[in-house]
Amino acid sequence: MSPVSKTSLTITHITTATAILNVDGINFLTDPFFGAIEGTEYDASSVWQENPEALKQLGVRRAILVGHSWGGSLALAAAVAYPEELSGIVLLAPAAYPSVRVEWWSRFPRVPVLGQFVVHTLTPLIGRAIVRTSLKEAFHPQPLQEDYAEQSAGMWTTPGRVSACAYDERTLRSSLRALSPRYCDIQLPVVIVTGSADLLLAPQEHAYQLHKTIKGSELVVLPETGHQLPQTRPDSVIDAVKTAWRAVDQRWN
Image (cartoon, rainbow, N blue to C red):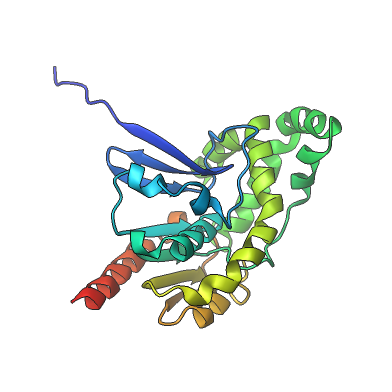
């Protein structure tokens, strides 16, 4: 019988519903992290100042940080706060400006008493339908991947996780309003990837504007592609990371 290997997992929380996961030495910036600590709240615009040792604790040195959707705002915040700790960033359909949409359900958890009652009562009843509708928008114009939808629905539809995601949803606009004026200070290699048919974060309002603001950034527009790039265009994600590393090599050579 061959020996059973044990997987090492380290979790570093950096927002209410986002964390860096280190799995056997490989680092992932999750968006959202479904094991969020209920009752703990963070601000995306200052999260790296509040957690300055997050990357160092994971042994990450001069890494390229990849962020998708809301995770893009975290990557941008890291590039603004600690550029010396990074080699570059790759932004996949990033949320960069305060024009982000706020979903109606995110308002309920903060209502005193009634909010938590609504979350605990309605989440089991309509949670899966809401997740499925959101994912259809995220995957459009590609078809929804059923296995991904099923796994996501199972993780999203617990009251504690709904409350954590709702907090990030409601505070994202103010966080980006505070963060976005500093994008022009970013001097790291930046690769921005967006789908031309993104229904959740319009490229014209986020990716295109960000490309104009960050000097020397590279913009990749994927035709007939929506928001969920890691699932629908993994090849383009890998190409973007390779492009970023080439830019880093050129800078240092």
